[in-house]
Image (tube, rainbow over all chains, first blue to last red; front, top):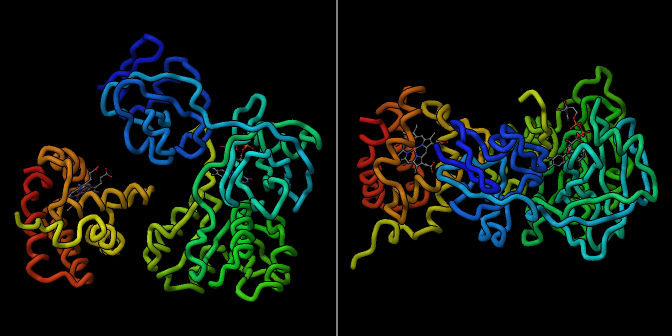
Length: 326
Length: 123
Ligand SMILES: Cc1cc2nc3c(=O)[nH]c(=O)nc-3n(C[C@H](O)[C@H](O)[C@H](O)COP(=O)(O)OP(=O)(O)OC[C@H]3O[C@@H](n4cnc5c(N)ncnc54)[C@H](O)[C@@H]3O)c2cc1C
Ligand code: HEM
């Protein structure tokens, strides 16, 4: 088994053990959050030895060259000598501009946009909580169109960070966020491609940003948004999406609920992914966007691919969360 | 020096064109798709690319030993056998046909894949 050297001490890695698990097992604590290679909070740097490609694939080329990698995603194939700290993504300090409930369990959080914060709608940031660590939230605002940053945060039962945002955060508070991450955003090189966007829950946040970005860029292809929630209380921004639909001929909005017995007026029955794939059977040349529940995102990705979408045209953010039991 | 099959097919661009088609065929083929049920499709697609580069005789860093080790678990735990191997080669051929690759080049690719049979099946 390969060995891991940190701060002059060497540890034997267990079978299939990640660097993060090995550190945790030896009571060496480093920041981490999603445990799935997405939030990038567990970045460390290899000073000797090569980290695995999987642990570097979402990082910037400049980071990769310096040996930076994600501790949670690296099951080393050779001995590694690593250094902790300093490699975390850049952070920004910002203030809360407003908090507004968009539905029973979704809070819209608007933040001051720091002057050198460059992003594309649909990317996500890590929001720092004073004790619970960081959580990822997607950017629903559009750079160049909105002066602020906008996040949509769903209240998770017993959720540390989401309930803090819902119940404690107040206008004027200062909070820390990371630089924008991820590459789920509008692609201005394909102005005529049909776009199929599928969300569950707060998966609408990145997609709402991407759609406004596309329309702002005068996208010419057809844009179809499918948004579903278990019950109607999870359908938010209904008026805003309807408004966009009235204003833009190439935009279609199909909101639905999957578990309510009685379907309210204006909503459809079923899951967004099912409705979308029923109504769009051949996806060659489509740009496909999938955000929300990991299970929906992963199965739909596969189905969209089999329906003809190219792997490189499927953009997705599964909202994975850390579960202490797995 | 004469061109390798990889050059004749069009190098990396040809592999990129073939990846989507090949991977889609494999996932739709009930004889073998259970081997490719990986959750992370991007990772799986990268591996298909490695496979195609190899089958096209392109630059790759896999040895016979790597092929043996890479598939050993599939042989032991999931019963990977000749039938599955043939199915993969068949999908490779169908992919190249779809891309209008001439028959003799398809045969060359199949022959390269064939050289890995013993290692892939752990014999
Ligand atoms: C790329 C990315 C983008 C994201 N974007 C958004 C966004 O725009 N809006 C948004 O609201 N969230 C988003 N999330 C999810 C978010 O990061 C947090 O996971 C979520 O807010 C829960 O954090 P918490 O601190 O409130 O709960 P925690 O304290 O982390 O969790 C409390 C308990 O609930 C469980 N749990 C957490 N989430 C769920 C869930 N969804 N379903 C069932 N059980 C759960 C946990 O396992 C734990 O047991 C995103 C995640 C990722 C990876
Ligand atoms: C025809 C000859 C074959 C060649 C040349 C070949 C080549 C490869 C290569 C290069 C990889 C990538 C290894 C890596 O980078 O991790 C790979 C992985 C894989 N191969 Fe093959 N392969 C062949 C046949 C098969 C067959 C017949 C099956 C099953 C039907 C199969 C199933 C797999 C699977 C499931 C993986 C991924 C394993 C993982 O996820 O770690 N291969 N193969």
